[in-house]
Length: 342
Image (cartoon, rainbow, N blue to C red; front, side, top):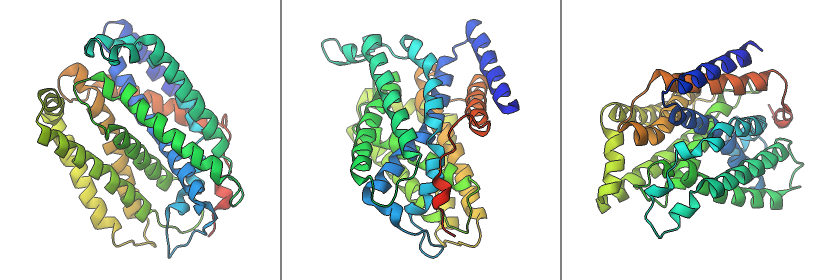
């Protein structure tokens, strides 16, 4: 209750600051997208693994696979409905974040991002994800739902891509990247694997390979998007990156790069008996992902990337509320841990 109460107080302070005239919604959106990425990434990975039938593979200390992560990932899924409800302020105040008039006249952008259609899509996405997350938080018997899992994976992939365009890319319409949705989903997978690797899970298991794999995919998508936009050299897209690589934005880019290099150094040896490297890399990866969420959103409103006290209030408040609800026993615990083999 203390954690939940602290989170509610912090969000109340954020509300008061907003009523005083400070722009707080970009900070809240950034924090919410980061928190949402954890259960969303878990849903994507769990449905993909079950579609492949890998839930039947035994977890082995000598052969770690993504199937090793299935039980702790399922423990994250009940968080999704809670985070979805925390998106209500974004739903109500979306006109302060997204401007349909910023899109070219005569195109579909103005109609697509009008408040009505935007709100309908957001409600449908969050409701569908919440139902699927609760469904997949309960482990299936071996091979009992590969069809449903495959359908769910496809639905999450498509709707997750559309949501990335709606909630992240649309704050600054200057960039038009076909890989943007995959980049956001890959970031969610990194967040989910990192959090799952930090959970107290019975048995001696290695999370090194799954974590390093997700980081490699995420870094590749970041680099490929930058390379394509740099090659095209379009003014609007160049402006989008210039706002994010100056000042503190450059610090984030170097921090993310060094984090990945450190992950290669610590995780490639795959020291299964020594868990500390995984803990270090997972913690740094979550910090990088948190900063990335603000790096993607806030420069559209501030002109450059920076971190403010409002950002800290939004993150701490949302995280405390979600964690407080989870550990308070108000959510189904999920039974993924029963399938862990030691």
